[in-house]
Length: 371
Ligand SMILES: Cc1ncc(COP(=O)(O)O)c(C=O)c1O
Image (cartoon, rainbow, N blue to C red; front, side):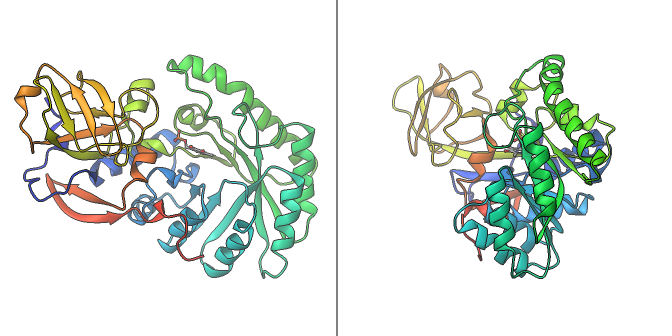
């Protein structure tokens, strides 16, 4: 039985494959996020999941005024949508330094913040900001186990924070720590895995404060560790989940304690029945993300079908119930990994009360917008 909240009365005119957004479910997810965080001001959700101005406006209307992003285009999309506070949590190198300065200069109503994890990056940012009439707010990115970006949260990070504070045109503005490597299904195991990294962040903040350096914010984690960091009483904590705004099949299965509802689905059609037990859908990996390995989507009504072939424009399912479906039939699917799936689509149908009522642009799927 398909969840009636996903049903569409007349899908005959809807293109396939396409992305569908259910704004009422998005709203419920955001409200659940705010409740778990115990206040909208303790949230800085990551926009990489949705990349849409409409969702920025939706979360702002519910009281969330801070946003996190990974690309210059996402930062620009947020600012253009009226977002007042943007953290670009990504190292700026090459021409992106200058693009960032353009952005700060161009969107005066938005407060921009950025991370650094190396003294050379801090110096480069300080120099790039020389002609600006404002100081740049800079968070130090900490490596707490993910092994991707960040600096060791001991002496090296303390020195970098002090350097940022001293450099002209910069202001040390807090710490950033992402622990996306923590993926235990069991919440107690997840807590045990997250605690050591979190203790290091808190100890560093304490040490810096004792040195007389203000640490106004600690931007922590993604969705799996969101309930853990949301429970922290420390001042300045900002939780930055992304995925749970739309949620997906992978997080639903892996983290059953995250009680959010998939709110971005895919519409697909049966395009062929090459054998009695096979259905071919127009849901190739140019329409649904090809990661992780295994089924790339949970096709509603065919959850137990074997996914036997996935190519650019085709998804082949094997099921003894293939005969129940005709060529042209519409199916809905929950993507396994929603964030890269959204980025494959230029726009999404907005589904309200069983009808496609409008379309929203996935603006920041592009790498370059204005700057
Ligand atoms: C730096 C950073 N923060 C937050 C997130 C959000 O994590 P999640 O997708 O688990 O919500 C991500 C995800 O990639 C990230 O890279």
